[in-house]
Image (cartoon, rainbow, N blue to C red; front, side, top):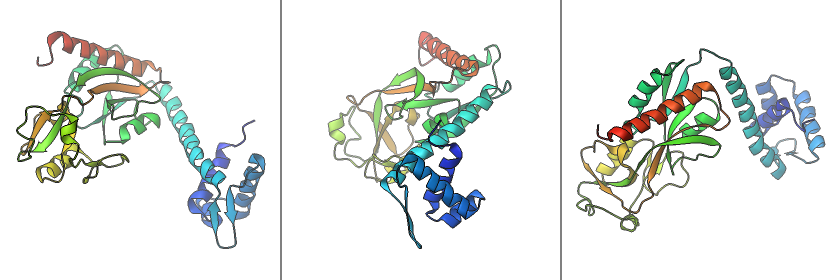
Length: 287
């Protein structure tokens, strides 16, 4: 028997969020005494104290902090499992593809054309994601497949096919001291100000940005520079120049999906994407 039921985790998370039994009980639509008893049963079963209680204050113990962190993931996983199960049984479901706007290296049209010829092809809903939420949409079931860029996106728990490999360029204001160079190395950019991508904790020290248009505006104002896969800045916007960074790790555009998702709906789209990639390679990238 499991140590905790999903309902009990929901009870605990509500109390941990509110740090108040009355508000948590109201949120859950249950009586406060019943909620208090449920939390005590959880603590007894686990053999640890999760909450410190006084007449005026509720706080989490280290054990409570740990259960809150892992409990949220568990609840999200159960919800995702339910969504995946429903979609697996839906014979009319659309295929949902999440992509960063302009982040398909001009491949998407060919992929969609190739997929439309597949037997049983479904309608493809194109969802536009930001810098950080495309992977999350795959994991929580809001999308079926995604176009991602590595090494920027985390592929843990995902299966993928590489569709395109390209170099990276430094994006500089036209008047920048390095703008006239034909190529750069990472060492040349060591002391430059790089942007902080919204939702990314280990970014640069420059202005926070959410998308490429914001980034370009900050670069033209001289507030930052950036380094991105070449295809994300083609054609080159006015006011900036793009200089290849010869020793930067290559960027890989991949089609990714949850590694546990073996539905024909997904497999058919992956096959079409691979076929479109091979056809493009056979005729050359500029044709």
